Image 1 (tube, one colour):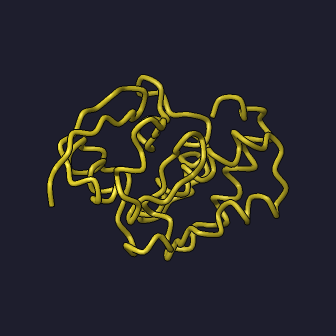
Image 2 (image 1 turned 180 degrees about the vertical axis):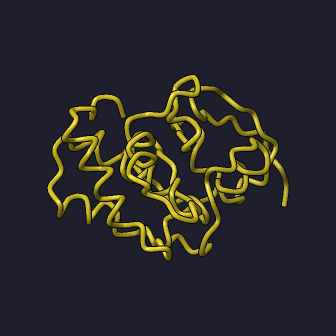
Length: 160
């Protein structure tokens, strides 16, 4: 398959990559750009480990071809922090112990961030719906819920 030059806007910066346009975005982010927060879990977009923000929407990317993404704003979990300072969701996850092995955590942080950017006061049902595609085999979901509710309760939703 022939490679093409594509420009991706990732974490606020433009990146030119030479890649087969059918390559899943996940592999480009990890291999070409060194952004290893996005994870390959199931490879079928069913576990949520590959979530990134695309134009502020949580998007699973382990099967989506990179050719779909030029002209879009992509944010990985690394891009949520500001100069090394965690965003409000990341900080709440750390404070609530909302990760055990941590493999699924970046995808869940992305989904939580998307939720709070689009819904400043989510109900329990809203949170559960936003996290529905995310699988955590370690069972950290109760602490994830605490972390999301903490951000809302502490009025830090605007800091996500």
